[in-house]
Image 1 (cartoon, rainbow, N blue to C red):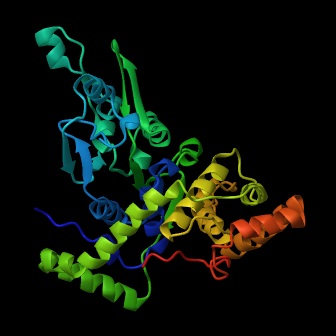
Image 2 (image 1 turned 45 degrees about the vertical axis):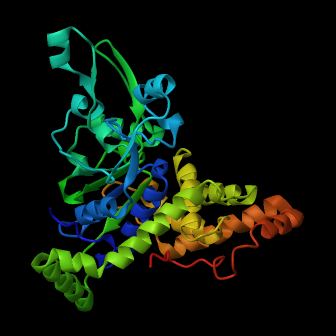
Image 3 (image 1 turned 120 degrees about the vertical axis):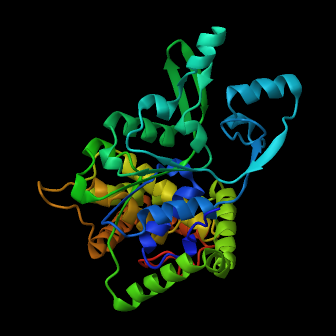
Length: 377
């Protein structure tokens, strides 16, 4: 069995790893698009993320890997069986990693009529597709910019709603489709249409590391991995286990992370300052900020969390001139963030500010500063 390169062994690319981790904590953030040149660990990171995630308890025999502990998110087949037969038999499966080919059709993605069953027995039966296999796992689309636009739209819809609804060929069926959507692309081969680009919650631009020390470390680790993958994996076993435990803990903590009206005003003022169209960026920033707080074992979001979220949610949504790349300047982001918080404080007044600060008292003074990195160690 081929060993997957460990997630914690990837050198650099902190923003890409941060986006992947946050989407693993809450897949309904909406997925991440990784843009970069060849050989910048895009596919390596996606595969490593799936290997990092824990083994899943599933309903035995269910093609959708339904969670036996979450009946509300079960498919219709599991719901019917549980009502008729009581508790369902359970099993365990590794977190699925599904690599979607560029040639994938709509039928292959969403599922379709089982032709063999229809011909032999005259029965209409749903044949699950890629979205069924990817439920509760990672769905990776390499060269997503070369995929049919309609198929990309289907993937993004399912990633946002967490369910796949099929109404076709006399079939009416729906099943859970909660997965971490990861798309990658080389901008030299063309870009996504703006309408599709905006549907990805996060976008990260990655480039090859230029520092000789970093390149030597990448080379050293890769040679070690290819010569003895088992020994290499063993060397990172502890760091992988610790990262996996942090993600699992953050998932359970996410729903408990709180925010104030002042935080919402700050987010809205920040996105307005960059003249971002629509409201998707605001929603993504809030969800992402909560995931950052959950990952760092906190129950209240801070300015730092909002800033880290904005770094992932805004660059691909900023307006740009023709033939220009959208670049989010860190200094400009910090300045706009300070102005947004100042506007929020002014809008809510001193009394509300004191109440808000009391709610956030669990966050330390250092956490309330605005650093440029998230602790992934």
